[in-house]
Length: 272
Image (cartoon, rainbow, N blue to C red; front, side):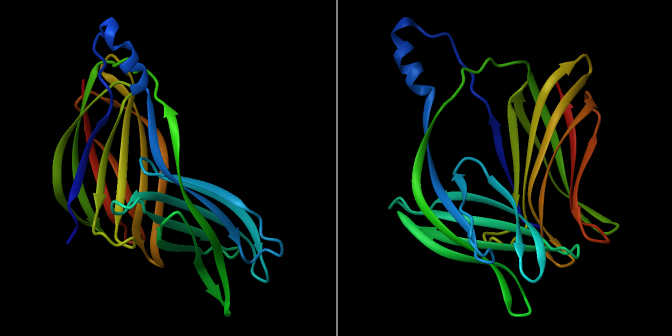
């Protein structure tokens, strides 16, 4: 049974006119503190493991891509995606990692790892094992925080997205839910799906940003990230594209894997 859909409203700020006495408060509101976890990553298959850095923030996923030699398998490519979430009131962070390992013979290996980090922690992430030879990442995680200056937002015209979520299983399509999301031109609205709490469960995040309105047309930046079950285990999904749609016309956005395809279709209509 597919899981529930979580709707996260538009990431947008509506600024009203400020009186002179509120200028100092407005300036301080433009700086925000973001809890984060700094990762130092080494591939143990390397003769001299190279240090690679990845900063995980609570408000967005982060990604690291690299290639390395794995003897005697050959050159492999790694895509590591992660997020750090608050875990309790003691300042601990829960690190969730998804990895995609591309082998020289064309195979795509998917793996996931979760770790609880307090102050500074070290853990191993084994992505794959061949002939008793593991491909393992050694990860040092340290809790930190970063500060970001947020830009003053000029809000454009309002845009509404009607989204119908359809579960796809081969030739069978089942409508799960329909929602209306509200945002503004150049502001992002996010739609999240999670089948369950386990890192191996299906999960998708659909981000829609109406970039510009041209008469009855709207250009939309579509970003999709998450994971789906595949023929050989979990499949990591990560893609971004721009589409142009007409006002009120339904546009399908498919997120599927395998043959026959399994996954989801987002039916999107824009109103502005």
